[in-house]
Image (tube, rainbow, N blue to C red; front, side, top):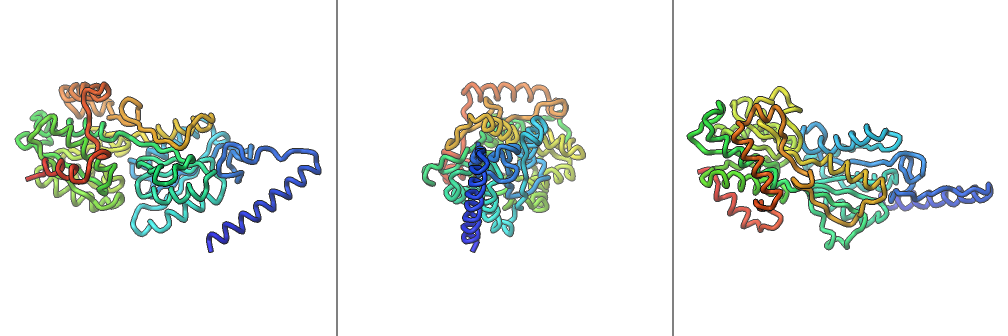
Length: 394
């Protein structure tokens, strides 16, 4: 039924186009460039009609307010609109929800946005949107898409040329977090740790390629500092349930963890709450969570940034200039400004100078290639499990 509606809508659009073209011929005027830079057509508000701003749609299989991943994406687009003005660039955010119950509406929502023809580019991320994107890209070859934080299988989906795939070297920045956590947990100058036990924690949302990449970097950074480090690893099962995240983190802190790392979206906020309740540490992720959560800042030493907002900001500006090449995958690490550790006055206050100096050296070694950080992207599940088991809390 939905396909029939789309077909009828297409017929109506074509009929209107022919009528407008006829009127234009009678008046001796051309109808303007109805295609423009917008692969999605000339819908209201899109730049394809030659009148309105460049329009982007940000489709979230989650919600804003996570103080992390999705908020970073929204910040980048907001910054671009503030810089250029809404008459030049504007965007719409669709918060589709991130629970299992929300999943059935992700694909229909994406296809509805494609149907509208209003958007120069439609943006989405995470592994859960890969299959819906593959379908939409095939059905709407003239619509442009940006896909972030998960590898898109170009070859396996017919090599579409309307997708720009953005990845991040989250393993690199997690290496520094792991190293910092391992040094902090045995530092007797820090009041919130038991220096006699080298135990740190990791809270993931769901086990997938990206979160395992965070984890592999975290483990390598920690074990390079202390080969005998133990790591309590917990999984929430989703990226939204902060209550479950808090329960898992509380259990980790009670087991001897005094420095944790949350990589769980909104669910990771539960670890930060647990850190405050237990007077322990919790590293933030994706956004500067100490700045975004001032009531919890005393328990957040710093945050590992995945600069989703920066990457989308840069990609859209390049697309607006007509120079962005679709049909490819790009990866941002330390060298490209795609990931970073927040290093501000709060960081300097929370983390001893000796540790900060060591982290600076490690970051430069990663950029120079002197330290090669392992990545789950080229590891089997068996190899990943072996690494996890090697540091498992006894």
